[in-house]
Every structure is written in structure tokens, then in C-alpha cells.
Amino acid sequence: MNVKITTPDTILYEGDAKLIHLPGVGGSFQILENHAPIVSALVQGSLRIVTLADETKTFTIRGGVIKCQQNEALILVQ
Image (cartoon, rainbow, N blue to C red; front, side, top):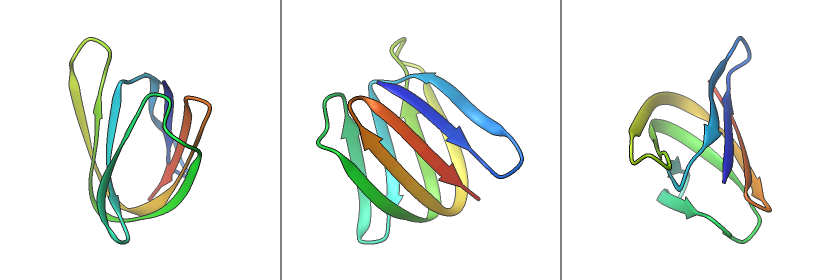
């Protein structure tokens, strides 16, 4: 799936991923390819992406929101 992580100032990550692990309001959760459409608020914590090459990229966030549909994930964070 295509993932874009952006802050008000810059793009932190843009590329493909096979897994996104997120700190949600109700607890952490994961998104895989072909996930049902979702919009969710995020809280402070670690956002982790596993790329198609099995590399793990970790970002510390203070909060944000994710919108994911049709294998396109847009993550706006602070």
C-alpha cells in the first residue's frame, strides 16, 4: 500500500509499506494491505512502518489522524 506521513512542516515518509502499526486512541492497531476504509485519531507514541523490503521505520509522534482507503494511507501527525 502507498503511505504518506506528513507534518505541518515536512513529509516524513512517502513510499510503499506492507504494515503500519499505529498508536490509536483506543489502543495500538495495525493496518495491512486491502484493509477496510478507516479514519482514526492517533495519540502520542510510536508509529512503525514495515516496508516491502522488510525494513522497519519508526517515528515518534505527539498525535494525529490517519485516513486509509483503497491501499492509500495518509497520516497527518505532529
